[in-house]
Amino acid sequence: MHHDLITIIGPTACGKTAYAVQLAAELNTEIISADSRQVYRGMTIGTGKDLDDYVVNGQAIPYHLIDICEPGEKYNVFRYQHDFHQAYNTIRAKGKMPILCGGTGLYIESVLKGYKLLDVPENPELRQQMQNKSLPELEAILKSYKPLHNTTDVDSMQRAVRAIEIEEYYRSHEPGQRDYAPINSRIIGLDIDREVRRQRITARLKSRLEAGMIDEVKQLLASGLSPDDLIYYGLEYKYLTLHVTGRLSYQEMFTQLEIAIHQFAKRQMTWFRGMEHRGFHIEWIR
Image 1 (tube, helix red, strand yellow):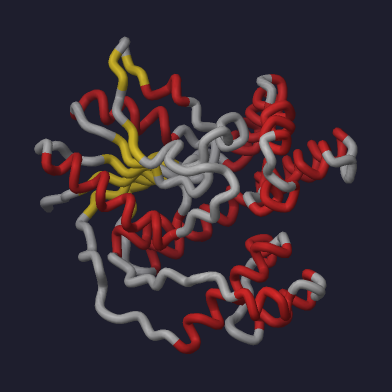
Image 2 (image 1 turned 30 degrees about the vertical axis):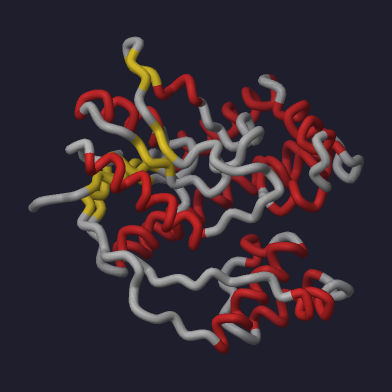
């Protein structure tokens, strides 16, 4: 079967980037990132950019959609679709087979299926109405729009309000025809034994803390970002911000963050299994 793209997916800490970089070197091609947080400059250690990995035998492998916007911006899947297709068309114009690599399932599925998405603007009036509500109250409002399968996806006030804002907008605005056609991609999934994955996640977390991840968060806060802005990005930036601002001890931060990353990896695998149910064929490598 003819393919126009190779997609590498898998949960965090499974070795996606190393696999994609080696493949890109063999095929003399370029990589498009599908990571919702690696788009931000200055958020390097916490998002695991590992840019040194994009070099094979002295050859730099070109990559796209990493370090493309400032921290504090609210990058979204609508923008990702647009940016992906710009990178994809640029690589295809060189006669090369692009490689899409990442763990953000929504971003990946949106470009493979060609979802039609609306650019949802901020709603100041709605935000004013929601500003004094608690997180449980916001979750209850969101549940009135749709079943809420994962409360961990709205684990901050900003995320919950934004989710309500999107649902309210979609209630009165129907998507039209697709802007982008579906892409015929070969999809390779990397999976590893659950216990091995747990060990890798813990070892990687310790390594990133030793590499200066706390200082990275302090620098982001010193640059003018508010704690809530960093908490919005979740995982490392949520828990390290809570630690740096005195709301969690170091041990509390480490334990809670470790658990959250394990839960995140499980949610990633749940999404990828769902893709199979939605008609995608994934070649799993274990």
